[in-house]
Length: 409
Image 1: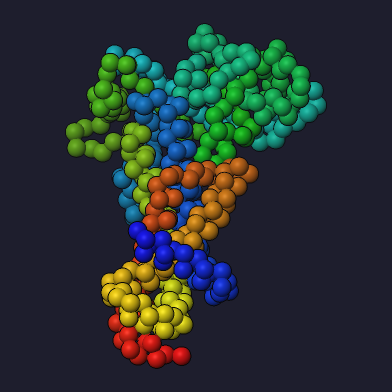
Image 2 (image 1 turned 135 degrees about the vertical axis):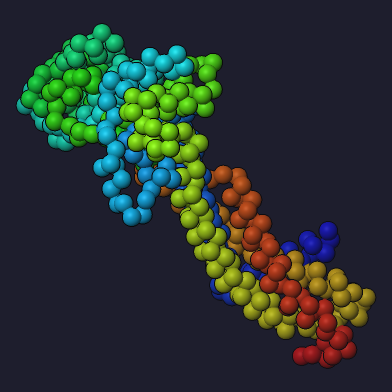
């Protein structure tokens, strides 16, 4: 331990005495560590945001759609496979919801339309047509006010729940409840304000309103053919059994024979996560490559500065050997010096990278979260770089002949 602390002290003194030379060595390591911290924070933040988003759906909720590109059923020779599949229908959703293993199946249709209130117009607002169970999978909260009831849903009532951003832009400080807004030229009663959870890239902050599914279909021009469902099993039913029941029911309703492929996709949260993780895997490889380049640049600098240090301290090495220092002690001292240099670079890169990640998370929609694992990995990588690239200079110092070293001027 004494020799280690001595090596650390000598390394810090070398940094003070040769600031420019040390800074160039530290810079390469700092860049590599900074890259590890920033990309690691982005990936960790993305994973955390994705987990939080899926948690709002409920752990057993799964998706049923006309076509989902991550299902593994893609045909490279067929660029538009969805054209061969019939759209999902509201009747199919009602049949699924009637299954004894299914708690609810939330239908989802989308449109864009202008919204007008007292002469103030919001353009291209996202209009979500859903059934009365939609708050169960949306996360957030409807307050003040309420969502539309099952009776209003069945009656295709002209009621609307607006999100907080629409409320702020149309009503400002006024209470929106009870007022009428026009969607696609028709009046709707505002019955609630939805405070949505923040999405992965801030998509919870866009203009959205929610109206009964039937109301949207009858009165708002929408993108036909892209209805999908969010299906939740009963609490006591395993998700695998619910998926089997939904798949069998849809195949039966569509008259599919054994051996024919499904004309719909059923996607669990685990499958969705697998697809996302395969995408983030590319960024992980990029992180490793870029950080290795930075650490190698820093490592080459370590070899250079340590070789200069060995030359400058040749007489000192001779004196230490004459006083009984062994090769192992000399080698250990220089390895500790090299590791100290790169660790300082690692700390600098960690501070800069953590600051950048914090700024990204605070001032942009990009999620960034610095896990403790990234900090440990960054510091370990920096120290290991010093040890690895310090082996040659340390070995050269340890092999010096004490007599020749004492004569060195």
